[in-house]
Image 1: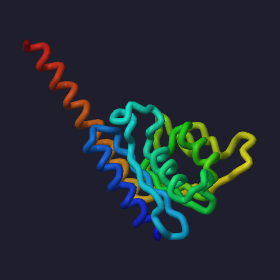
Image 2: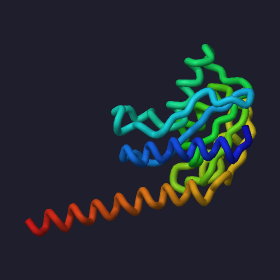
Image 3: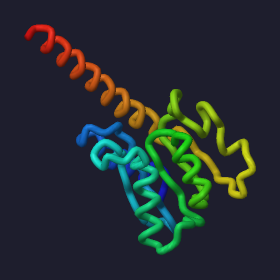
Length: 161
């Protein structure tokens, strides 16, 4: 499966998060050219702060293949992973990370902490960024713009009561 096709699947997952009122991040795990698992952000719905798209997809992949190590797998995610998810990639032995948009506030791969470049990790992975970056960024921007508008409307409504 090529990077663009897999990222389009991750974007479809991100839209599910968007529709559920979650920050729109989607992830897909591919191993040997086949989709093993998909996931989207669900911390609000699951009441689980660890239910990021990457975590959901990697947990499902590990269960499906019967191994917590996903050697040879590629994770496609619409937004650069945070610190928690970057650590998960190392521990699960993901071979390759492909992300769409950088995350300037909490991105831990290329934007801020550069976690894969430092530390005593016994596993290194290949990183490719910018796949369908515009689409991934636009979905995030639209989500936060709509959320700000809803919050403004609520404030206006509460002032008029």
